[in-house]
Image 1 (cartoon, rainbow, N blue to C red):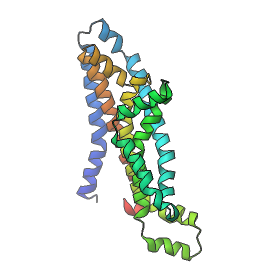
Image 2: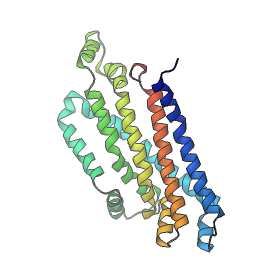
Image 3: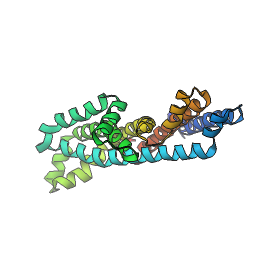
Image 4: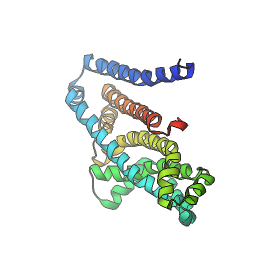
Length: 248
């Protein structure tokens, strides 16, 4: 028989995406059935919304892949005994990147490169979202019981085998939690890509704000928030499915 806690967890599992879809549907119905002027009609179309949403997803995916490929190996590297003296330096640099305003990091990268476009938006935002994955990977590996590590080495495992079969599996919950945070950050900061001609739903928000068209602003903001909530939901699913069975 399922416990009340499990039943509540299952209810939450389905309630969140359904609530998000209902809110998005209600906002789109409100926007499309209202009296729109010529500017709103040009911006609030299914084609424009799908295009900007697809661009936003591409930005988010690119940022997430870079953060995953850079953050996890770097976290593993600085967790090694021979590299622990540089861990505070690496974490400090990542903290500085995240402590700075996201738009400031974006504009600084633009000024340094003098370029605009998709990758000029993606690279500084990946730096901005790197810290959660890096820090959680490091913390996850540091909290592994050292007696388990020593036991692995005692039966003849190499350092890499101990990392692969003992340390990393036990650190997975921390890594996934960091990745979930980074994904939500990526969706949020991707709205700033329009400052460097990177596309995304930030274009609708900016247009609605500058032209004082509330409907355009609301549609862009709600869709961006909905994507962040759905990404957070998917991250929660990944934590449930990919974490070690004994630690779920």
